[in-house]
Length: 242
Image (tube, rainbow, N blue to C red; front, side):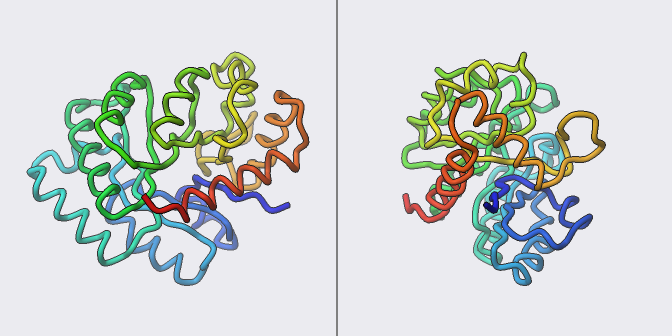
């Protein structure tokens, strides 16, 4: 059964342009032009538009209004399938600016009825606080590594959980809480070419099968059930209108 990789970066496409059922978030807004060209030749690919929190200071000299207008013009021109990758990361500088930029992304996602791909590292409380301010959002929290209570809160806000290589680490919060997380909230991802499994140098979309197998073991259900639910969840996320 083909697995839809819900999070695969531009670098992975360049390394293997044959990939089909993948979703590619933008790291920088200017990525959108190359992603748009890729989607034209691969109708099964989905593309995003956003500014990754690691690069928040790239637009530090822009006013919020200017950045808002810039992103919205790109949304109208290129019609991305989702907004992101955007979010919060306390391991990186400019955390206050990251929060301002996240609000801009969420407001545009709501206005244009797009799902959001969120990055969250050591910022769960801040992320939940921001999401509480919005209604009728939907999306994925990428590389989720929280407990089941956090998963429940995100579900109430309309968010699925992106599950990748962290599920292989028996010490991760994700591994300890996966049994309590419903299949209806799980979407497989690889973050290719980043976050590789085991000792390999780079991850690849086909590694999503490894993560699906681990989920099936921990939840004591069939591999087919894990994959089918993940694919269905991703399709529902894209098709749903707010």
